[in-house]
Image (cartoon, rainbow, N blue to C red; front, side, top):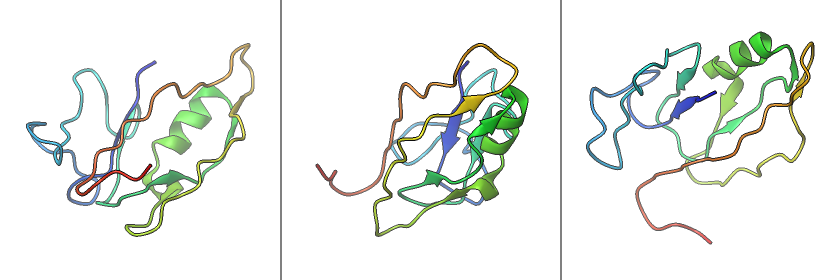
Length: 107
C-alpha cells in the first residue's frame, strides 16, 4: 500500500503541483483522509496516535491530522515501537520516509 504525508503548505491542503521542494501535490490514486494526510505547515512532524488496531482503524488514525504533531525548531525522536495490526496476519511496515525542508540537513 502506498500512503502520502504532506507537511508543507496551507493547513490541511495539498498544493496543485509538485514543482519544487516546497510543494506537494496529492499523488494520483490517493485520497486525502484515507490514503494520504495533509498536515499544517510544520517541520519535524511525528505520528502520535494509536499504533494498534485493524488495518482500517490504523489507516483512519494515521489519516487524522490531529494524531500528528511537530515542532519547527526541535527534531522529534522517531519511536521504535512497531504497529500491531489486529485481525490480520501481517504488520504495518514503514519502509521509506522522505523529508524535505528549507535549510541544511542535520546529520
